[in-house]
Structure formats: structure tokens, C-alpha cells
Length: 194
Image (tube, rainbow, N blue to C red; front, side):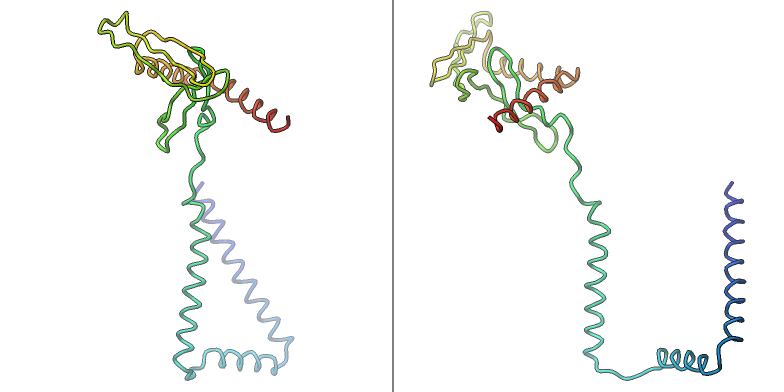
């Protein structure tokens, strides 16, 4: 297959050269000597050496550098653009343990700034943990100091955060996060309109 395309390429190049010679021969017969003389004089003028001021070389060099830089910038700029964000970065809020949990994503894709908010007044919840050493007796209370909403979770604060992280990761793996993100974008659109 490669030999066929190479043969075709060589054949096309040969035909192009033959056709160019034929056209040039026809042009030589049709055109007068003055036309050929003007073409030859133009070629001599273009290729003849002249002395110009050195600052013209500087302008020419500067123009070349600017043009080259602009061309390279336009060619290479798409390669340096930031890649699109992963689709699941739209998933930044969900309800777990009866509380609204919000988080953000780092550039590396890690979940950061995970915390809960009151489902009634949307304020950031405070927490209070028990100091018991027996695991069964430990608990964390998430409290809204504005409206007094109270949610209790078995285990300490880190247990609650880890539970929510595991639930988020489960929704990411199962694809259930898409429904939540779509519902949130619909709610946001309704808030803007209403």
C-alpha cells in the first residue's frame, strides 16, 4: 500500500514538471521578447546586491522576530491550554446524615473543604464531640447555632467526615452523583428565575 502511494506521488510530481515545461514553452512562443526582458530585468533587480543602512537590517530582524513569535504563539497556544475539568467536579453538594454537605475539588482531583450545613437555614454547622473513651459511647453532635437544628452521629467528628467521604466515593463509582448534580443545577436555575 505504501509503495502504491509513493509511486502515485512520484508520477504526480513528474506530470507536474512536464506540464510546467510545456506551459513555459508555450508562453515563450506567445510572449514577445520585451516581456521576457522585463521578467529577466526584474529578476536581476531582486537578486542584485545593494548597500543599505545597517538600521534597516535591525528593523528587518525585529520584524522577523515579532512575526515568528506571533506565529509560534498561535500554533502552540492550544497545546498549553488547561485541560477540561473532569465531569464529576460538578458534584459538590449532597445530603448525608440529615445534613447538607458541601466540598470542593483540588486541581489534583482530591476532595477538599468538606463540611456540613444546616438543612433549614443553610448556615455552617458547628460540632461538639463526646470525650468518652469507649467507642460505643462516643458521638458527635452537629448543631446549627442560628436555628438550633441538632443532628447526632455515632462516633467522633472524623468518623462522620470519613463516612461522608465514603458515601461520596460510592456515588462517584456508581454514577449516582449525576442525578444529584442535575437536580442541583435545576434548583439553581429555578432560584435565578424565581
